[in-house]
Length: 486
Image 1 (cartoon, helix red, strand yellow):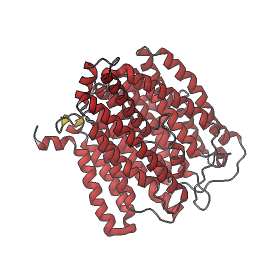
Image 2: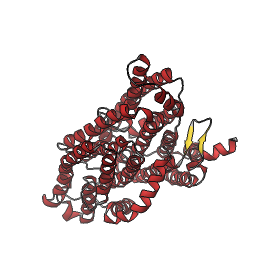
Image 3: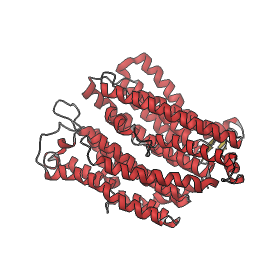
Image 4: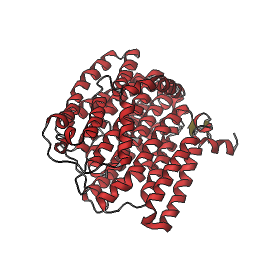
């Protein structure tokens, strides 16, 4: 394959990389005054990267001697990543102007672009070293974004915690990669799968080494999707980071990390399905349970949504545990719907500000919202009911898809336990709705932003019963993406 054809396969990453470099030069010369222009240019770059997916970037196959995979699976996840990244860029300028006195610098959208580039490499990785390079590019930008409000102690603390725990997770992942390489002799996913298929995974030193390598690799990835027991960073980082950054963390990196987990499980370690399925089932059930129980006592809305993200990751992992094309398609459908629900929820959090424009994040501040801001209360109620999986909202279909895939794969007990645990999680979502509709008002939020209001309306419509109209298209797209892995 010639070099031009391979460059066409990585065109989205080329667009993002060149765009980030160009905008970094604009930021250096234009200073803080260029922030809004750089932000809109970054959105245009993300749109360009999305358009670039229409060619060989989503159907070209393997590139660079098998290090990179351009297929329908990568194309689907990249669309979700770029959409979430663009929304996170659009939300930032007004938020920082209100809360930090125009403290947003033009480096913010550049960091988002670099992070999106790393996430694109993650979901297209067909080699453990490519995986690690993409993961670190995404993570290094994320550490800076978490601590972007330099004068806010909470933001600095969030960045430091994320960095320290992220370094630990990277070390665990590298140790797993070294074990897998040592016992298989390769870092390419196809050759690793061949080694797992050839070696009986029981009874000798090589089999134990392969299993330990698998465990450490999945442990490192679990940190990125904030699955239990590697979730400890999530509530503190979500609470301390600026709200647009938190919205970004809860959406795009989640999709990228889940896509990476699916590709590693199916392509690299598919023959060891019985081994990694045990890890995935434990992480799924533990994440659902902890996310539901720990959220009950939260008084900060961002921390509550952090535990909600842990809870939802557990449900998505049920689809992965199935290990079938239907299960992978269910995971992709779940993540697409999750993006709309989560971004909508954080958009409402951005609207929670007092008369002076300062953010208000307590659950108690939502009391009586249905009387002071009925439209905002209705939108948040839609997102909460959808996250809880209550029909007829679209979030119900997301949970139904993963449970149905588990049942089809013979994991009936897992589906039953997951359904039972979803009832626990419904409590804290309903508590938010009860606070808005049945408690006495304690104050009134400041005027809303038109852009935020428009995006909230779009997200609310997407997760409303009207979302079911998209099921035929979503099913066809996700099944095509899932089959690319098998």
